[in-house]
Length: 157
Image (cartoon, rainbow, N blue to C red; front, side):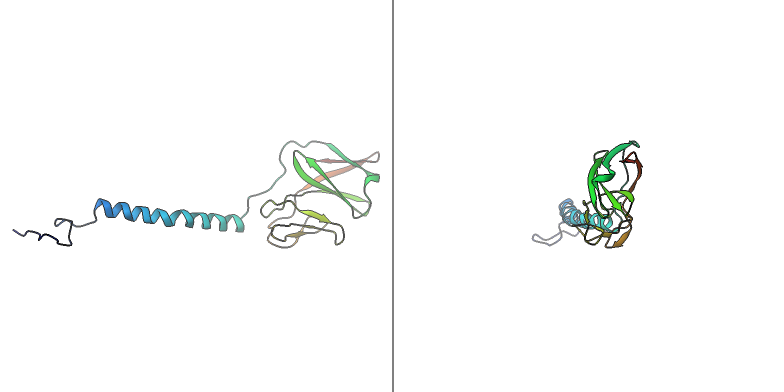
């Protein structure tokens, strides 16, 4: 018979493995690091692969301006299905784009001086066709259909 001496470093009484206390400590230490790690991984994935942005709601036919309201190079902001959009006049043509950046959803602004949309959050730049010029945006700005009739400008989804 072998007996453990008092003060022996082994608390397992001859069994292999870890004690419940050691298991609990290991689990708590692991969870302490797992939470922040999951947050970092999730943020990195959202940055590299942003969620798709699209036009929500029905294809509502909405009057947003008069032809005389805008001169070439100007824009007018409006809401369509509760989302911000911009109506542009490029020459004699009208175009309507979502103002929600396709990167992470910040609201872009039209800059008439260089005829671009600019995202204030991560420096994405879009041209007057909604195409990405530079920055992290993965897709062009979503576009609405524009019709001109009797001096009025209408948009639809």
